[in-house]
Amino acid sequence: QVQLVESGGGLVQAGGSLRLSCAASGRTFSSHAMGWFRQAPGKEREFVAAISWSGGSIYYADSVKGRFTISRDNAKNTVYLQMNSLKPEDTAVYYCAATKLAVVAGSKGYEYDYWGQGTQVTVSS
Image (cartoon, rainbow, N blue to C red):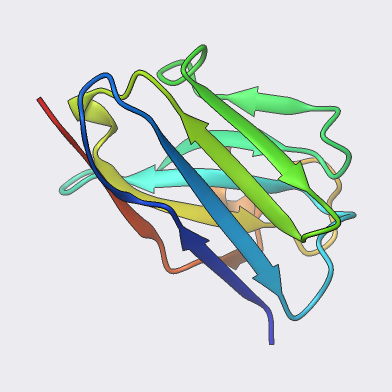
């Protein structure tokens, strides 16, 4: 059974940093694209960042560009999201996602086949 487990969320003050991790189990995702999405209360899920299987293609939402960095360690079957200069509007549940076959994926949720349960990130002002 495929599982994606996020960790690293928490409460941080504005301007602070957090590093999210997403550990995959049940299959190897080293050949597949992975991404991060988030959903704030009362809002639709939105794309945050995506990374291709090799790390050679990376995409960010405009709202996080320059502040967040996505990376992956295929040997550990893990993807990371380093979040710096956090703002209150970054408060959301952050979800990790992975494709079943595609080596590259973008900003659309339907491109991803597996999803984690989410980790809460709260940024206080």
